Length: 262
Image 1: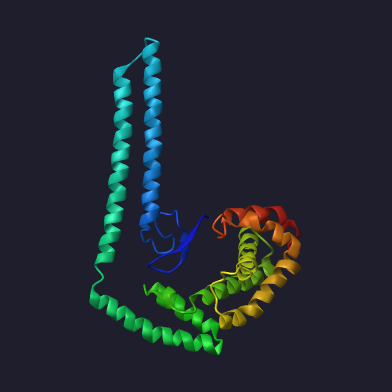
Image 2 (image 1 turned 180 degrees about the horizontal axis):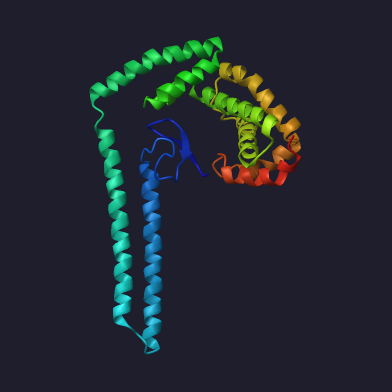
């Protein structure tokens, strides 16, 4: 993955280069536009190659105008169809966004006020299981749960919970490609992001997440076999230039070290 953004529809963390959210299908206009420009550049390069080949054929006395015209026409047609498809997707996304009236916005704000208060109660009481159930349900119904004040804390807790559930399966079935990568990714996320100055948590949230962070570090050192000096050396291998996690890089590290996982 490259830089991460939050999907404006479901609130999930997604790769900024994707043309749409893999979880809810919502169009990521910036990613779609970037992919379109990349395809245009690729087509231009292919046209340049065709031009070079045509000149070479001409010099050799073997120039075949009809063949070149057909090739160029096909490439131009592909560019046109690609542009048309992308334009339709972006227009559809804009139309979807424009259908939200002022009344819709007010209704969503009222919903957030009521349901975020419930989230706060569950957060304050430490009932994170029910909190997770409530957020999952509301997000599936299309509500904007990511604007809740403690959503960053919730994200950390989800990584912890996913790791805990995955390790229970590992204890019964052993490690596989998925479990080894996801546990490594989640534990390293805790280790690196919580040690970052820009961790996105306030003082109370940091205190609440502390016990989970301790357990994740214990998994990293005891079950996965990494010591803290290794983790410091691996930082550049698993983070991209923006300080975000790169799934493929974590996967490479996992492949290298997973033979010692317990």
